[in-house]
Structures are given as C-alpha cells and as structure tokens.
Amino acid sequence: MITFLEGVLAESLPTQIVVNVHGVGYEVLIPLSSFDKLPPTGQPIRILTHLQVREDAHILYGFMSAAERDLFRLLINHVSGIGPKLGLAVLSGMSVGNFKSAVVNADTGLIAKISGIGKKTAERIVLELKDKLGIAAAWEAASAQHAPGGDAVRINDAVLALLSLGYKQTDAHTAVKAALAGAGAAASVEDLVRQALKRLV
Image (tube, rainbow, N blue to C red; front, side, top):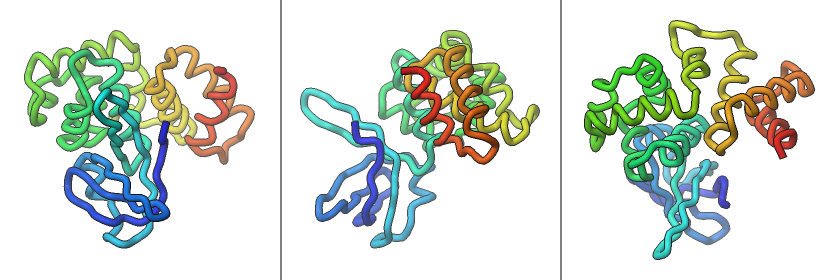
C-alpha cells in the first residue's frame, strides 16, 4: 500500500496532480478540497494517498490532510454504492467538518446538494455512517455545538482514523485512550494512531 508521496509537484489540475518522486511521475486524483491546499507547481509536496487496485489499473487518490483521507475511506469502505468517484465528489462539495455535522444532524438535504449525490444516496450515507459504524457519538463531539478540549479532539481524530481502517469503535477508542496515557499530552494524532495500531495488532 502506498500511503504517501513526497517529491515535487510537477503538474496540477483541479482534479488531478503529477508528483515527481526521484524522476518518476505519479498521477494522483484529488478532491477540490485538497487542490486548494496545494503548493505552487515546482515546489516540494507531501501528499497522503489511497491506492485502489483494479484488474485494469492501479489508481492513486491523494489528500492534503489526514481528515480528508479518513473520510474518503469511511465512505468507500462502509457506504454501499459509494465508490472512489463519489468519495471525491463528497470532499469536493463540502468540508470535512460540515459533512460530519450534516451526518450527525441527519441533514440529508444538505448532503444531497453535493454533485452526484441524490436524496436516496444521502439517506444511505446518513444511515450507514450513523448506525452501522456507530460513529455518531464521535462525530457529535467534533461538531461545533459540542467543541471538546485538546485531548478530546485528538482522541476523536485518532479514533476516526482507526475506524477508516476497519477497526471497531470500542476497540479503537480503548486503544487510543491507552496510547494517550502512554504517550503524554504532547503526542500528535499521528503518534496516537501509530501507538494504538501497535496495541490492536
């Protein structure tokens, strides 16, 4: 699995970029949310990736933040009928924070405004992300109405990252809490995820 690319931004378009990594050009499909965060062409770049392996192609999807990639993985892995194309459409049409709030508040009308997402698909997204995974409580904590403190934000983000990898919420939460206790207050979200994964193996 290719988890990130680090190199020079050789080309950039709103929907895809080319990253030059030691003389090899990698084509990466991106959402508009990541396009807005790109450095100028010719500058160094580090972009998080998700690799999709198909019979006829290996396709790289890129994201400038872990939150974007985690949401993309949640959508394509846990919502029936949502593939990478619609996953990118969701990220292109709404910020991660607004999307989380829409799911928590069951605002299917807002989600349905995203290009390519109809009313039925919006309802399926809300149903499967709120009930099937049980992540409504975690997203509730992330919503603006219930803004948590620093530790709670990092725990929430780390748990969501583990959920996107397929772990159960209870297991992920327990592992992240233990990782925070061991790593201390200075630990980043990436540190917590890394330590939690060691406990989940």
